[in-house]
Structure formats: C-alpha cells, structure tokens
Length: 328
Image (cartoon, rainbow, N blue to C red; front, side):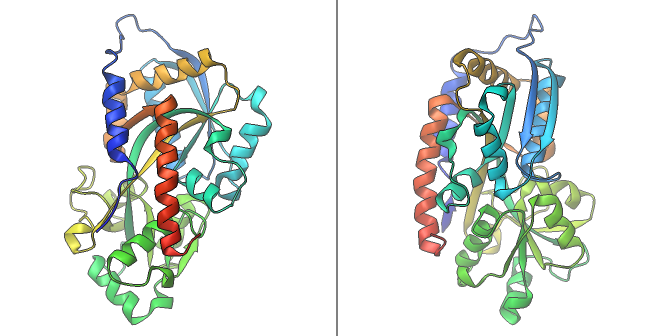
C-alpha cells in the first residue's frame, strides 16, 4: 500500500496541542490584523490560488482581518515568488505567501536554490487530497477504464498536472501507477502552469486525465464539467460523495497535500505572532467552515517550530520516495 500521508498524524497532534492553549475570544469583535497581502506563486484557478483567496475570504468575513489583497506571481515552479519574498524582505512584512508540498519537492530537485528555511514559517493551514479527473465526455468512468486505456496505448494516454515534471501532480500520478502494478517511470506526464491551464487542457482533449488537488476538481465535477475517477482519501469526501477513492478501486494510495503560509525572512516576532493568532482563531469561525466544506479541505493546523519540524520530516520522507521512483 502506498500510504503517503506526509506526517499527517504529527500535524493533527500539533493542532490538538495548539487548540489546547485556550479557546479564541470573539466577543469584543477584535480585529487581529489590519490588512494582509497574499502572494500566490501560480496562476489563477490553482490550489494555491484557491487556498489564499479562501483563507482571505474567511479572515475578512470573520472580522479578524480588515482587508485582504491578492497577487498572482507565476514562474519557475513557484521559485519566482519565493525569490521575490527573499530579495525584497524589508518591504514584504505585510505579505503572506501561500505554498505547499512543492516547496519541499522543488528544493530537493534543484528547481530553485531556496527552501523553506530561507523564509519565516507562519502556519500550515489545510490539507487537500489529490484526485484524477477526466472530461465529462470521456469514455473513461473509473480507474479500471483509465488503466485499460493506458495498457492499450501508454503514449496516447497522457496525464497532465499543474506542476513541473517531478513535481507533486507528477509524483501523485506516479504513485498511483506504481500502486496499480505499472512502471511509474513510464507515465507520459504533461506539465502546465497551475491548475487552471491544466484543467483547460483536459477539457480540450489535450490530455486523457488530470492529476490535481481535489478542491480544484470538485466545483467543476459538481457542475458536470468533469468526472472525478479517483481520490487519494481514505474515505469518500463529503464535498463529492459520489467520487470513489483509489482504495475502493484496488489502488492502495492515500495522500494529502498540506498548504500553508510563509512570510519574508526577518519578519519581527511580534508581527509573526499576530499572523499566527489570526489564523488560529479563524478555525472556530463559521466563515472558515463554509470555505473549508465548500472546498473539501481537511483542517491541518501547525505553526512556528512545529511547522518547521513537520517540514523537515516531510523533506526526508519525500526525498526517499523520489529516489525510489527515480526522480532524484
């Protein structure tokens, strides 16, 4: 069984410990932060974009943050935005950059020279399962159909994703193929700049299937634009209860991708504490629950030193897996 939860138990334990410090107080309508500028390392429509905008929606809707603004900065598999945060650290103290598992993967593979240690770690925030989806008119209806098409014509059954070769969407596709008994390295993977462009390629028939975050697929699936043929959750997700898990279909792959927020290096400790407090309080608000449920996210909260320890553990786990699959 390919069970790649990326330290989810450690994350959950840290969340419990964090919440145990005391319940947030909202009675006085206290605004924790005047404004936050969210920097998004990819294009519109991707998982980073949805996470930043959803978090900003909840924080402002709950009154914890006065205003939120957003900036998409694609390039270098996320490296352009990381470089911008580091090179302009003094002027970015009001900015939070969203990122996720790829910040670990791309540092390991040398896509960019920086890693999470070069930034201020604010908070891990949510988890998002991965999914394989096909267009609404595709003859493929489940994983058995996809595997049959792949076996008949491997090169003609391309799988796309919104990450670079060797990135997370590629890694998930490889994990699924390996768990199905096929050679993970034979997968024809086509990368796109963020989930929105990858989804457009799927709908145009350029690729046979798309490896993506569950939250990116669920709205289009519910609207009947795509079919979710497999989810890397242990159990079906409420946001799309008809979507079968990989395990239900005999492919033992469980994976959840964390997403969270980073600040510029050298952020003053008091400013960091304020950001962390706003995010911690957000979890108990109805505004956040609306956003979370809509996207099918899992609450995974971790901050500060616990966030760093988790990322260091994940770096080791991912590095070992990528070596096994020949990506390193």
